[in-house]
Image (tube, rainbow, N blue to C red; front, side, top):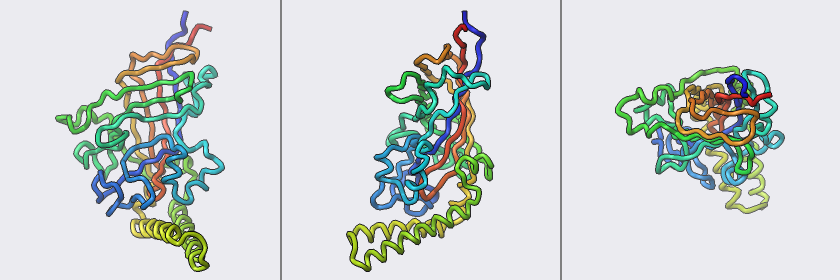
Length: 309
């Protein structure tokens, strides 16, 4: 005999990465020519893909100073993971196997190789108001070798196929500026000071490399390339100013119910109903337009029937 149906809630959070072009660049600009984001010469192109997990290979190619230093002592925050499991608001010990399980988003509409923030240049959403659909939203929770996890399959067609906005209105984000929860999550309460320190860090790196060049130390070509990269980043921060700074205290919020195909596997002390919609609510913000990373935090709710005591 089973207990009455309840709600199993998975709280998740962590840093994500997205190498995204920004206005006035077109969305498919791969290097960044006129917006405030850019790909440095040795980095991957701007591909728009939302990466909820940041692996070592990605860091090796794309981590900019001082990103490694920022996370060296708290690497657990790199990547979005399940941080809490509860049933009707109370911690659920049987869900311990999901704690620290990674979240990933899979799939992508060609030519993109993964999910992206989509508004079709304000056709489906609104770029100025930061009203975006994340498409596709095929969510997977758990690692390949995990004993418990879940997955969902997108039930929304590509935005360009819709005759009107009514089909995706509930999937659009809305924006909030100056949210205290964002500052608490990323540990940044003085956004101007945060980027002022960034420029100081870049100036120090440039000075040290120029001194090494003057002494004839190291590979001159490699040092010069790094200097030009640091100077380019400094120029972007100085030129775009408030447009970059304001994003650190801004977040986009989403709230809808996942209605597509859903699966849940593993022992969690009861049964998850995969036939009913799964409500999800989350935000993405604390965006660092220099490092191309941001923070995600939210809750996925699953209809749940505990096993008999």
